[in-house]
Image 1 (cartoon, rainbow, N blue to C red):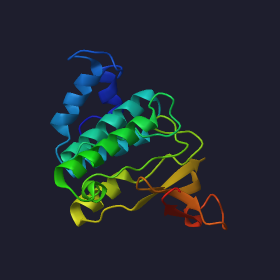
Image 2 (cartoon, rainbow, N blue to C red):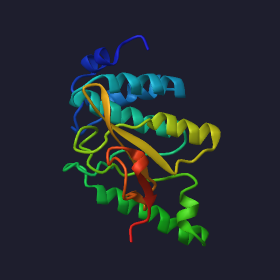
Image 3 (cartoon, rainbow, N blue to C red):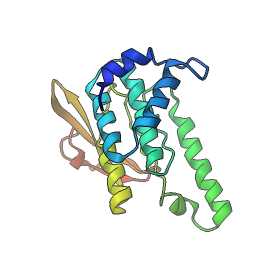
Amino acid sequence: MDFTMDQILTIVGRLDDAAGFDTPRERFRRFLREQMTSIDSARTFIEQCRAQSGEQSHRALQDAIVLAGRLLGFDPSFGSYQHDPGVMPQRTVDFYQEIIDFATKAHGGDGRAYTSEYARLFMMPGMGHCRGGNGPDQADWMGVISSWVEKGKAPESITARKMQDGKVVTTRPLCAYPQAARYKGKGDTNDAASFECATPK
């Protein structure tokens, strides 16, 4: 990439949700579609976004992740932050359930098993909008996606982490919906190893 992400965001203008075809955010999305043409370029864009802070880089990161998913052949919804007052998590859960219901009607049998072959939902308890909040807010999404697409290894759980002063202070498993992390009853509650994925009763 010839320009840094900070320079690109300065050129296109403030990324907001204003309507229109030639808004700064639409210009940025068109730029991404033209430049993000491989997994390597997607990784570069996403890592540059993650290295920045502030609302601009958070919005850029959302757009880059969505486009990276489409590049890999599916349409992701990485807005399922369970402590975000602006994005209600239940809407994402309902949408995912609609996909399962459609698969059940269209293909018969176990719609959830059919859907999980190409789409899985991982909720992030305690996470704010894009990052922050009380819960772990970071995970190796690109590594998970690459492993699924390139090696056929679908994720059953993903280890999320919370950083403080450059150090990992909490890890927690993110479980494929409808499962959720359940404390085993012993061990450090800040350690993912003390939890297991289980379907809520």
